[in-house]
Length: 384
Ligand SMILES: *Cc1c(COP(=O)(O)O)cnc(C)c1O
Image 1 (tube, protein in one colour):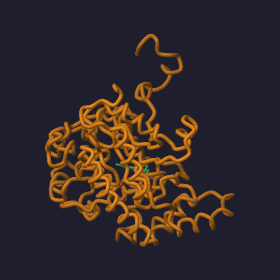
Image 2 (cartoon, protein in one colour; image 1 turned 30 degrees about the vertical axis):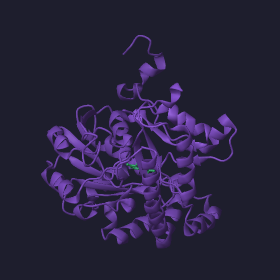
Image 3 (tube, helix red, strand yellow; image 1 turned 90 degrees about the vertical axis):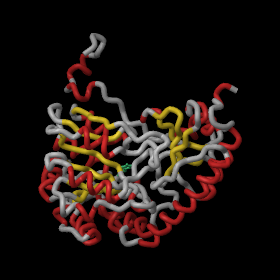
Image 4 (tube, helix red, strand yellow; image 1 turned 120 degrees about the vertical axis):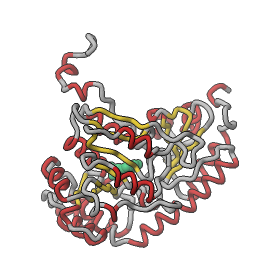
């Protein structure tokens, strides 16, 4: 503890004293306030460009008169609908205020300063935040190199080598954010098979619906086979409900029981429960989301390629572009043109920008703005 540390900071438990808040993508309203722009395109938070599902909207509106009441703390209807969808017992489903809450609750449940967690360098940052938040030991596996088939992706061998007696949680994002990389089903299945049972694998499948890529498969069918496997999913991405905060996990019922004891009694609000239930029945919406993403991904990859910003194949609703130089000046120049991308220096990737896939028009706006301000790899646009 440094002597400069304030009294109140020093009163906090050690694990949380040095924490810094998660840095979200810049909100549209904030850029409007700062630059007085009104036509802003945000491609910074992997949000759905499709708009809210009409069925979800109707369910939200129908729910409004009920807002004097507490939500169903057990989330009965949504849990049973998800159980049916995934063909598992409802006792295996646990709902969260976003899947992020579940990642954090799992850390609180299974980690402490005497236990450790394994995850990959460049893994989704919420995994590291969850581990650090409880003061557990983070064992970070070096990522695959930038010229690998899955550039900067998870190296399962390196991860397996870090799993020890005190390892309780192994966080795996498949596909991963911000790299867009994915793990092949066979390799991931083998990794899980070989884990000691005292190490629980959490496979974060936030981008599952977009992952139309060779070798990818969900780990859901394996949950019944391995009691030390958890799969998390979210309504924030393909289902387009990021603002409502709802996600879920599928696990052994004993893990559900622990997390249900630990969570806040009404962690998922009633509007979110109703909207999530409704969007599950809107297969047109999901299909449209997936199609718009696939064509937008093509559009961005070819457009970025023309600007010498070749991006690797992505299994998500975003791409990760290596700009060849410090990306911060380019990020600011895009902001001036009303385009919000996502710097990822906080991931240890200061030269990269993560760009979410938008509508065809939004993608065009991004490409036009880039064309105006990006001078090519290695050319730092801040120095002109
Ligand atoms: C966006 C994202 C999530 C979703 O978080 P929510 O809390 O459900 O909104 C989870 N995992 C990864 C890897 C993500 O990128």
